[in-house]
Each structure stands twice: as C-alpha cells, then as structure tokens.
Length: 271
Length: 297
Image 1 (cartoon, chains in turn red, purple):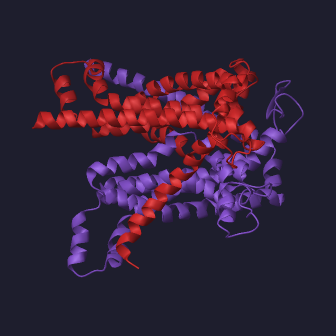
Image 2 (cartoon, chains in turn purple, green):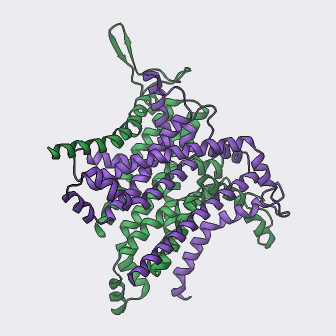
Image 3 (spheres, chains in turn red, blue):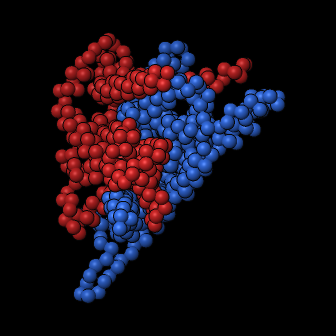
C-alpha cells in the first residue's frame, strides 16, 4: 500500500463525511413520497406545504426578529469587550473579564439555559421585571452568548491590525473616541460583518437556551422544528433545510467572490 | 487632566459589557447554586425560598438533600459516567478523522487553503438541529444507509443504527468535527517547514518524521481541539434526544427531563452544579492549551 496517498484519501473521506448528510437532505426534499427516504418521483409539493404552514411561518418570523435584535446588541457589546481585551492592557479584574467573555463559548447550553431562566424568575420575584418570559428574555439570553462569539472574532482582528495609524492619530492630538470611529472602526469592519452574521446564525439556530427562557406564544423556529422532528421525519422540514442551506451557500459564495475580487484588485495595484 | 478623562472613558467602555456579563452570565450561576440548596415544592415557582424573615428572625434553610439524592440514585452517577465516556470517545474519533484534514489544509497551497477552510466551516453555518436531523433519515431502519446495504445484497435485515450509542457518537463527531480541525490547523500551519526537510534529509521515513517531529509539536492543537469537542459534548442534549434511544443516558438529557418533565428545579440545579464542577478542570486545561499554542506563534 502506498503511504503517499493515505493522507489525501483520509482527508477527502473526512470532507465527504461533512457533506453527505446535507446532500441527502437536499435530495429528499424533492421527493414526492411522504416516506422521506424512499424515492418515488421529483416533486416540489413539500415546499408548497411549507409555505402553507402558519405555525412554521410565524415561528420563522419570531426567530428572525430575535436573531436580528440579538445579533445587533451582541455586536455592540462584543466589540466593546474586544476593545477592552485587545487595547486596555492590564487592569484590575482583567482575568475575570476575560473569563466571562470566553466561558460562554464552551459552556454546555443546558447550563446556560437553566441558569438564565432561574435568574429571570428570581428577578421577576424581586424586581418585578422581566414580567413573564418571551421575546425579551430570549433576546437577552441570545445576546449574552452571541456576545462571546463577536468578541472573539473582533478581538483577533484588533490584535492582527497595524496600530501605527492609531498611534499617529493619537500623537497628532485626536481624541480616543475620534480615533476609534475614524481609524479603528473602518479597519475592523470585515470582522464586524462576520461577527454579526455569526451571531445572527447562532441565534437563529439555538434550540436549548430558547426552550428554557421562552414563554407561551414565543416559539422559535428551532423549537417548532424540534417538536416536529421528535415525532419522526417530515418532508417539509427537509424543504425548510434546503432553503436555509441555499441562503447560506449563496451568502458564502458571494463573500468569497467579493474577497477574491478585492484580493485581485489589491494584487493589480501592487503590480 | 486629559489622562483622567481618558481613564474615565475607558472605565465606561469596560463597564457596559462588564456589567452585562456580571448580571447575565455570572449572577445566574449564583442563582443556580442557591436553588440547588432549596427544596422542591408544588408552587409557582416550584421551590421553597432559601431564607425567610420571620418576626425579626432570619431563617435560612439549607437543603443538601438534592445532592444526596444525586449520589444515592445510581441513575445520575451512571448518566455522568456515560456522558464522560461518550464525550471522550467522540473527541478521539474527531481527532482520528480531523487530523488528516487539518494536515492536508495546512500543507495545501495558500490559495487552496482558504477554499478548504471554508469547506470545513460551511456546515457550521447551516442549522445544527437540521444537520442532526439529517442523520435520522440516513440511519433509520428503512433509511438511506440500510436501503443501500440491502440493495447491494450485503445484509438481509436492516441494521439497528438509530437510537443507539453509536448514533449519538456519530452525531457528536459529525457536528463538532470543525471545532477540532480549526485549532489543529492553526497549530500545524505555524510549524516550520524546515524541520520536516531536515528530518527528511537526515534519512527519516515520512512516518518517522510524523511520529517524532509533527506529532509532539501539534500536542497543543490536538489538546485544544479535543477539549473543544469534549466540553460541550458532555452536556449535549439535542443529539442524544434525537439520535439516542430511551436508554441513552446523558447528563444533559437528564437535566432537561428533571426540569421540563418532572418540574424539579432544585434537582436540575444540583445536576447543573455538579456538571460545572466536573467541567472546570477541562475548561482550565483548554485555556492553558490555547495560551501555549499562542506562545508557539
């Protein structure tokens, strides 16, 4: 057996493993039969079914709202946290601050969900706010764990960025606030975009935390999908999955194309 | 004076996310700790208060019963051990599958590297729940895999794949693989190519170079990657709930059942506290591994 081909073959199998289930989801979403895995013939009827299901449409709308607000809040808070970690040097409480921003990344979701719910319940008992649970509590919970992801993405960009322009501006008398908005912000803009998108996707996808902190009338899309899927496979979920995959694929291809064009443009300007 | 203004401005910048995290990340753990010491009751919310003011006297009732219950009922200990076992096996499987991938990406030409990295990250951007769901269709008795095997004449009866520990491990390996590949890639890509050339020039076989040069140097990346799989896998709920059977005991599922089905909030809190204590060590190890791979850079 030739050892030279072992690694590439093993790696290709790894990539195939990542994509096989996704491909099968897409294929069987066009299957006419209700038995998801027995192919009968091509049909788009599950897509039509999907758009006639008011429960799914309403949950999708709720999830999109939550994801948009949480991602935006997490972007602001996460960027501030990243700025503190990347630019403020040593200060009292830095270890705690660092721990609190990175721990949510690895914390099991059941713990985060349970602890936030218990917090909301005790706050309601003692402060009277938040009254009941629903959109607001889900948004707070999602902002908290998405903040950590935004902070990591933005921090790595801040650390990798050339600081000489910032320092020059400060030396020439610009205020730190002005330096941030005129120099730092345009520099980290790509990281802000990917941080926001990451937060948006994570919020849209979360089942466990939302299940804990949600209340009546605030079922998110993953909660509806989970209750459907628990009863067995349903072809309209395949259709929904295919639509979501199509959106993600389009987004990624667009960003690759933009990056390539930029790389090409900067390459030709160097020449 | 400007120094003072700058310092005050910085304090404000740090205070906004700091206070948010104190209130919504740290404080909740104290609430969980408090609740794990209280008694369950049929009330709204379903537990008795820990302290009560009774005519100028403060009565604090600490109840260790929830923890004793966790030790006495074998269900909880078994669930913990089973979660640790499934998470360890999954992390090792991820390592076996992910190492060749990380290595190939690190050794690819730079322009191909980005494409391969995107291919690793891309599934992470699609819904986790739906990717786990996809495996139900593949694994169930009349699912894609069984149909193919029967069609090929390899088996007569469908294999029981779904609702087994195998399915749970497969699901965890599948969803967490990118978490292993990325830190390992970051580690491998930093290794100096001259080391491999030197080993080769001195007559080492490729496998010797791998065992004596590459493998020891990639320990921080392997450790960070394995822990990034292991830690969330211990508390995983969705994967055992969808792919595991009724007898698949994982601690995340037990916590969920205590909370949603039995409505026993104090026991659920005690389970969460024990889980936190169990995970403190791996989380500290992860921080060390991440720091040492940063120093390598």
